[in-house]
Image 1 (tube, rainbow, N blue to C red):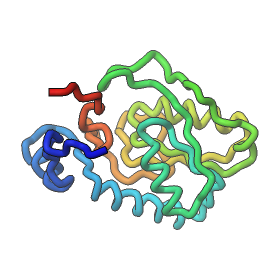
Image 2 (image 1 turned 30 degrees about the horizontal axis):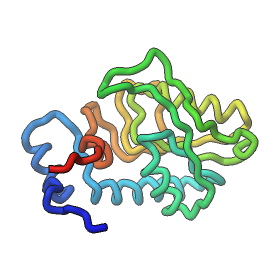
Image 3 (image 1 turned 90 degrees about the vertical axis):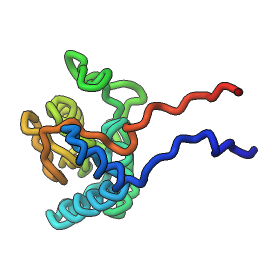
Image 4 (image 1 turned 45 degrees about the horizontal axis):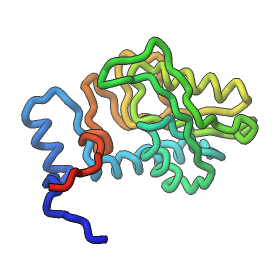
Length: 184
């Protein structure tokens, strides 16, 4: 089936997008795909240099999924998983507390294991702290990695690429969701 590519929006190269939005004084931290790749390698080097050798890399979904996969590849870890936790509802709005959603992680598999827990940002830190507690309760040794940390976090990641107090625009969540196109 041939796709109609002429109706797709023109998306600038990530670095052009980063420069344009940052230069416009948006007050936002803009991360493009190229910088995401560089940041991932830097985080992986920090983990490796620390001597921590995870048995599993577990993402906090959805924000941590791409970073977790990239870190697992960079660190040579084949054991990957995700825990779906909802805290942010729409933009900066949050639920009263983080909520774990199905599917649920297999607790027996991580008991006694070394786990690298990954999220895109430790903003308030409540989601990260909640999942660290869940994993430690079943006996996992947990270290945390995030691309960004905010000054107000209650859970400082073990490994972090950058600190910021700005709203962060990630390459995977900048554009709106793809929906079915209606025929013209």
